Length: 150
Length: 128
Image 1 (spheres, each protein chain N blue to C red):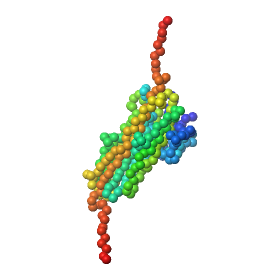
Image 2: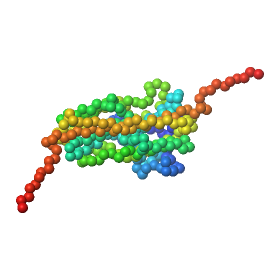
Image 3: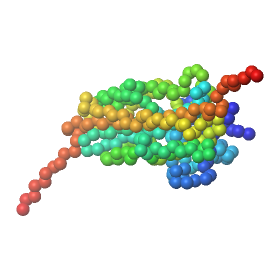
Image 4: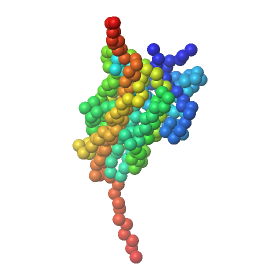
């Protein structure tokens, strides 16, 4: 008997469902090995770093082009929205597996400090969007010169 | 109809060895009159880090993404950068020798044409 994975719709239970599918596959002989399924509950998966002079936001958006994405930076927030298109033709295709989610998305990331929103730069490279948002001059760390009385 | 299925590769060599830990790329698989198409999500992967091999109808995808810039303090971490790996057993109806692979914005598309012996062909009838 063949167990066919049910591909869940996007949502908070998708990751759990996928993990369950993988467990069933392991038990019933379709072993995927020790691999992990990359399934973010919130799309796109996002990393945020803070450097001395900027906040750097990286998002995994495989298959998307700059035209599919809209990035907005305001004083305290970065908003990313867009649409994930299906690669499967509407007609004439027999579907064996659909694991890539599609549809519109929007998410916001709160920036912890004041930024120069008009100086933000976004680059899209190999399916990873990187937005660099410089901090305001006032919020950058300042070096204080210490004078030593001898 | 035979479907491509996930398999654990039993016979390993350097090209098909799975990494110690890896991500399984989300993959769409569909069939048209032209052949079979697989579309796999591999964000951060460049053509240099990608290896696609076919051996005895087992298709192995292995990719090592370019290392991510990690300067600064981490404020939010929702994804990790690591290798991708997945193996599929292909139905015999496809010509794995004529596989066509393209990688665009972290999306790998593989197209396998139907093997010639399955294409409809006209038999010429000779009249004696």
